[in-house]
Image 1 (cartoon, rainbow, N blue to C red):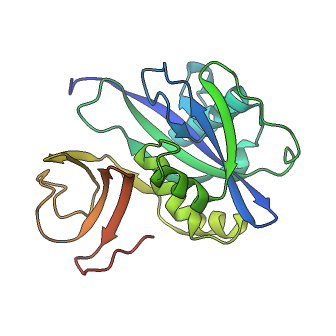
Image 2: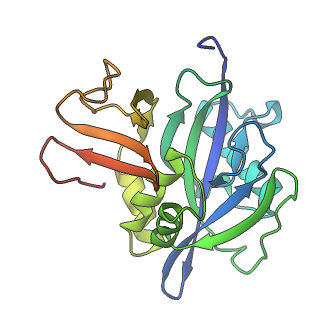
Length: 231
């Protein structure tokens, strides 16, 4: 299982300005899919040979734009994409991806209706980030930790420009989680967590992790003090 090859992939966080603040597009994956079935995600998918563009980042940009066009009918320019993060599927997993996350503002296509492909993607919705997080906690929608954490960051921004400016100024987050199970609780440990190197969720010290409980994922990040700080 640990020898599963890691396939390059790319995701695009599509943003638009609404009357009450920024919104992001989430797509509902077909429940029959072997990877992420039933999850609500940002547009994206695996890199294809036709996406090759010389560098890893440029190839990922091209893949993110293509996947967004194929999955929901929106076309965004490659040069408008802002790098957000890079996530590698943790071991052990039957399928593993090394995924670039980009973000971009929907401008020229702002009034174009979203058209999902009806195969991999069965429906879509525009969400305020806080609304998407609340829907997840209520059990109305399921999502994977990279989506959940990205929405947390978006919830701190009061506009599309503010979100993009933040990501332009910050070093890109690179994460390969480590899974730790204690009792009935699943912990996704990230670099900077006291238990990341050992895989021990109970190890005292700084926290940087997602915790799966009855109400879905909960993001925890702090330096060892009692207060959680969400970036």
